[in-house]
Image 1 (cartoon, rainbow, N blue to C red):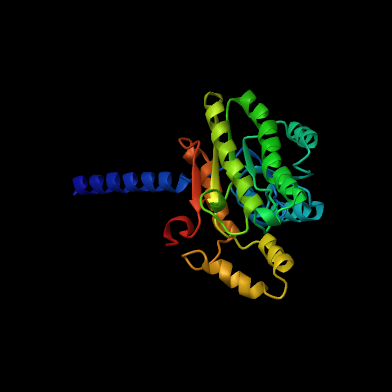
Image 2 (tube, rainbow, N blue to C red):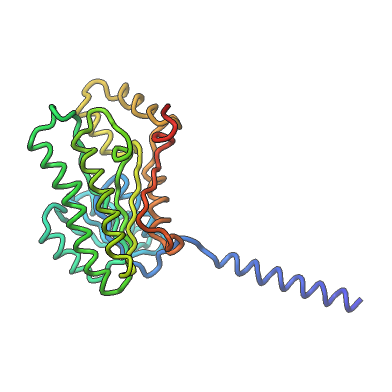
Length: 280
């Protein structure tokens, strides 16, 4: 009898101990991390900021729209998170450098700021081309350049850039946009290679269409009176049958920026509802 009681207690304590250990294991935590997120006033950038703050990071919101990042900051603080807004034009290298240096330490950089344009090469003016280049290419360059110098001091850091399905396949009437996202992919590979031995990881993701306020504004400006028709058409261009939600994109970004992804660098991850491989 005492043997049975003893064995029961051993089994109970073993199970109880390992159950407690499992409960303590929380993946994708960012406790103690400082993250800078561009374009964090809305859309994907905002979803990333909210998720990172929920996972314990101190998030620095970098955006040109002061009202939008203040609203995101308030939302994070109301949920007991830590957020600091920075009004910044990512095309201005000196301004980016000053803001990043004021943060002092950056563990994670997410480059989410971006603009778009509809048109083939003949419909893309010099001004259109320069506008997209300045935000989508030079903006990413400016932020990576400022962040890398800080990350090197700590011999660690993670950079996550937003590329696009447009750097994998031809998208009609997206000449300038596709050009910029191809550059983002190339810069990601270059930085990941150059800073391997500084402990800096650099990856990018390639989303298909994501339903954000940017998309709604894009349809309103470029397809007035046909917004619903174009929204349905763009949604169905993903084999999965819909656009992604910003939160779904943010979850992949969280993984790639977490310690659980410490073996991943120099990679691009399509998150596209089957767009690249299944549209045949």
